[in-house]
Length: 473
Image (cartoon, rainbow, N blue to C red; front, side, top):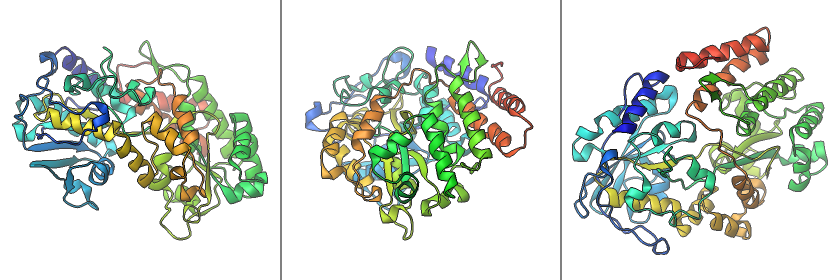
C-alpha cells in the first residue's frame, strides 16, 4: 500500500480532501462489446497484490457495476453508443440500465466545491471493506486533478485488466500522459481528444476583416500580437472580442514550467502575459470580464461577441444550436486553431482497484475509447473530437465531418493538428487550485477591486497557500 500512503499524505497536505479518501463499489458481468480489431476481450483474473487488484476470479464477476461521475456526459455516451447496453432511459442516462444481467448504477456528485472529488475520496477509503455490490468499478476524472488519483492505489493499471499498449496505440499521446502514473503505468483512457481552438462569428469576421474564410481569419489571430491587433479592430466596430476568461486556458496550456517548483508557487511568463494582455484589453473595452457560463457571457451566443475559445465538445454543449435565433442555429460560427495549440477538458475512464467486474470494465474501456466504429458514431452524432488519429483523419477527408453550426465547415483537420501539438510536460497536481485562484484574483485587478497587479498577485498566492499550506511563494 505504498502509493496509498503517498496519496493520503498529499490529500492531508492539500486540505481539500479533509482527511477523507475513498473508493466505492460496483460489480459487473462479462459482455461482448469489445471490437474484434483490437484483439477482443479476455477477463482479467487478478492484478498485483500491492494495488488491490481485481477482487474476483475470471467468470465470477458481480451483478452490479458502480460508476462514479460528476455529470451525465459519460452516462449519455454509454446510453447512446455502447453496444449491448440497455439504458433504462436514454434521455435520463443517470438512471442507469443493464448490460446482460449486470445492473449499471451511476453515482453522480457535482464538481462544485470539490464535492465530486470528496465523494471519490470517501469511496476510496471504503473500497477494501465494501461489499461486492458496493465496490466502485469505474470512476471518471478530469485533467486538472487526474494525477491525484492516477498516482494513488485507487486507479488500476490498464495492463492489469489485460489492455495492452497496442490496444490504445491509435490514441493521442497527450491523452495518455495525463493518466500515466509516476511509475509509467497507464491508468485510464478517454474517448475524447479535447484539442481546442478559436470559434469565431462569421458575420462579425466579414464586417471587421472583410472575410469569414477560416484561412484568412487564422492569419488575423495567428499569435497574441495579431490577436490583440484584431481585438482593437473588433472594438472599433462596436463589438467585444470575448471575455478575458475565454483566453485563459490557451495561455495556461503553453507555460514553460510547472506552477509549483521546489515547493514554491511560480507565475510563468506566459501567465504574466495573460494578466497584462487581459488588463489592457479589458481597460480598452475590447474584452469583457464576464465569468464563464454566466448570463452576460452567454449573450454572445446570439451575437455581439467575435469569438469563444473551446474544443469540439463546446460546439453542442455550449452554443445553443437547437435554439432559434442563436448564431449556431443559423450556422454562423467558424473554427480556427487560434494563437496557440491547447486543450480544454476531456474525461478519462479509470478502473477502480478492487473492482469485482474486471472483464466488463475492460470491455467498456476498450469499446468506448478504441472501437473505431463507436468513436466515429460519437464524433458524428455528438460533434466530438474523438481520441483516434485514424478516425479524425477519416472525418477530415469526408463530408461526415462537416458541422452545421459551423456553416458546414469541417474542423477535424485543425482539431487533429491541435491534438498533436499539445504539450503536457508542465501539468501538476496543483493546477486546479492555481488556475482557479489566479483567475479569481485577477478579476479583482481587471475590475479595480485591487489597486494594482502586485496586490492581486498577493491575493492569489494567499488563496493557493490556504488550499495547500505546504507551499510557499
